[in-house]
Amino acid sequence: MVVNDLFAVVHEDENLLVINKPAGLVCHPTKNGEFSSLIGRTRLYLPEGSSTHLVNRLDRETSGLVVVAKNSLVAGELGKLLEARAMQKEYQAIVHGHVGPDTGVVNQPLARDEESKVAVKDRVRTDGASAQTEFFVERRFENHGRAFSLLKISPHTGRKHQIRIHLAFLGHPIVGDKLYGGDEDLYLALVEDRLTAEQRAILIFEHHALHAVTLKFEWRNQSWNFTCEPEPWFTEFCRA
Image 1 (cartoon, rainbow, N blue to C red):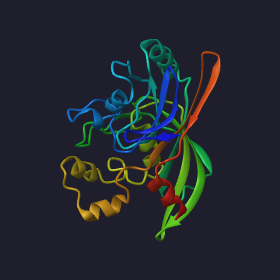
Image 2: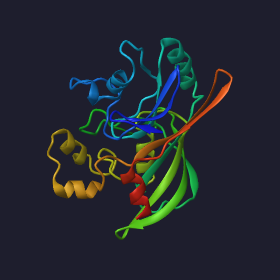
Image 3: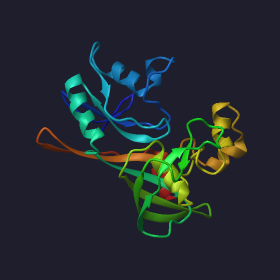
Image 4: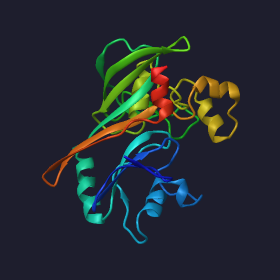
């Protein structure tokens, strides 16, 4: 993996650029210049005039693998794989508490949280869209006297905020999750730029601890398997 001032490059060839997106970076363009978004940084990285297409996307605070197609033909082919759920994704997450079972599947439908002040927030609802998330406990540990678990997660569907909602539903929200961690005022405080030192201490991390670690798919008669490690703040917390 090659690291530069823009991002860490996991793989590059004439068709693909695979990036380990840092936490806190949005995928879509912003009004704050090319450096402020992942797509903008890819345009700075590639030769001027290059065609760039994000095949998959991650939330601002989620780190990990993003595939960029260097031409529209490749973007179309990989986009069809993504839509057909033919790309196998795995994530790592640090959650609060010791998760009881070593493995399990959360099968709970998701829809808009109409009681929330946050427009983008969803929740488990019986009338929602089907969603399934499989999890595996990689490690249970303690840090500063508090219990945590490191999970490997395989989403079987691709609903908005699915992993975060399902883990919170289990009673084990992702560490640093401002929206689904139990107090959505943490999210509002972030948006309104009023997070206090006490609130930051509750969150522990600046960004939520969710990382897209593995991406596998079959394409053009070849097996593609990409993997990347989380950022140091993530891994060091688990080792403490």
